[in-house]
Image (tube, rainbow, N blue to C red):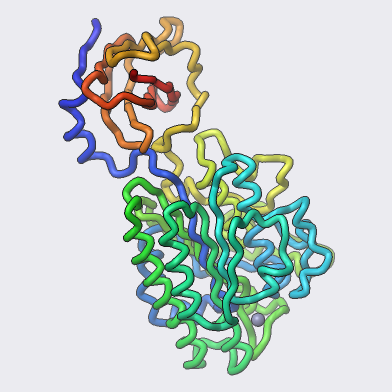
Amino acid sequence: MKKIITLHLLLLVTSMQIFAGGQKRKVLVIGIDGTRADALVQANTPNLDSLVAKGLSTFDAWHIDITVSGPSWSSIMCGVYHNKHGVTGNSYSNSNYNTYPYFPTRAKELKPNLKCIQYTEWAPMSDNVYNDGWDLKLKGPDGATTTTGTAAVAQIQDPDVDVLFTYFDAVDLTGHSSGFNPNNAAYILAIEGVDTEIGKMMTALRARPTYDQEDWLILVTTDHGGIGTGHGGNTITERRIWWIGASDRATVSSIPAKADPGSYNKTPFNVDTAIQHQSPVQADIAATAIHHLAYSPTFRPENQAAWALDGRSWLCEMGLCNEKLVGIKENTLDENRISVYPNPTSGKFNISVSSDLNVQSISVRVLDQMGRIVFEGENLSKNSSFDLSNNQRGIYFMEVKTQNKVTVKKIVVN
Ligand SMILES: [Zn+2]
């Protein structure tokens, strides 16, 4: 039996129930250089704490490469380790970013129009890196935490920004001058200073006029710990790092300590990649960021053979792998077996699911171009009729779901 539904009557009800219909996915990466996990845990960091309360985190992650900034930030941004990206020191000599670029370059292979911005304090990270995908590369004075926070807030206010990477160096500089140590009050204070700026950045992010139509993933990590006034070796306090992935719609979880996967900082390399993938590591920042930016149910960055990523995505563990994004065609359900007609339509149209598809009923959502849900219905007949004639003319996306498979149909109302 055909079912006629007048969509505009249901609009109010459905829009109240759904949190996130097809927002534009964006990424903020915050790097805090040289921050020991045990010191971060001890410091008073309400803003980082609230990110931890909104996602996936670990304070027992392993550094598995050279515990120096150049190679570590390259691993974080490229999603591969130094045997691929080539960077073994802070001169960035022998870099191989043409083969293993920064993640914005990879994301743009799938979404060319992303606007990507970097603001760093430490010049080599800006001057010595190429093929990084930044549309705007900004740098400020080294260790100037509040200057960096202010600059980051300004970039967050850019209506078009899709990816922002902000980098703070003061914690590492303090470690070098007076000790990487949770008992060093200056070191703790430097961490707390960065946390204050992160608070300002998050306030600015949520104040974006378009925030409700956006889906921001926030990734925060460090490049290495430290011992005494240095780092570069393989002691636990140099290798113990932390990793936070947060979103206002993420599932909250914390990953306990896992076995040591080994390190690329020793020859021969002895990294166990199966153990490595049990807990977030540095290369996972790039993989998770790309996954979010170019999300579709069938896409995983680590499965792109040509990219040869060492990192894996944690997006699904964060609860952010769903079909709420529109504009990406999903072919997990054979779309040729679902017909929408007439299309284009003046408003009224029909869906018909091929009878050879063993489906009892369908769930349907219709979203407008901004990703707002204008209709949602469950347990509908395989042959249903719809009416969008009271909605604005334009392009709509209809998600048709059967069991756990989904396809998206574009509908033109004119
Ligand atoms: Zn350092």
